[in-house]
Image (tube, rainbow, N blue to C red; front, side):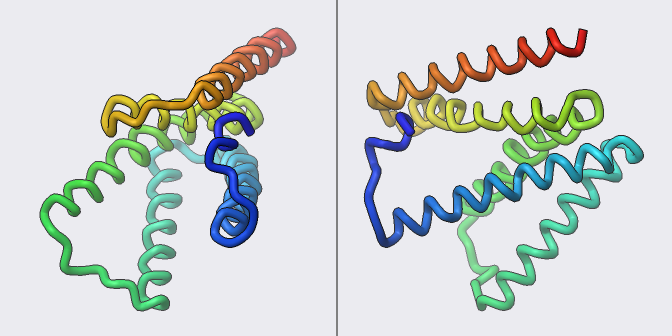
Length: 158
């Protein structure tokens, strides 16, 4: 709440965005639980080909159904598309998918909370967006919570 309170609004687009974020959290939890079960039987490469391939097909069909343009885009935009595919997906989510085989799904799911902190740090360095004191405080609470959760889970496993 501390991270998002500075731009809190009631109603309209903000409420719709909150609903989508909540729905996203439910789907991520389901994705992690299902992924944990599949990753016990399937190695990483076939798993990510299946997941990323089905995502690509779903997004393509959504673009066709909603008549969203697939072309033309500038070379700079295509570079951004490529970077979005390479960095957060291949490098980021593949790490989460790799971890599902070796770490409890709950730990992987909770660690995703760190994405907002990482995004804030990247926004500072790339876009020169300075976080508010509340956002920094919220980020520190998130990181502290992650450390406590991961340490307590490791202690329970040993």
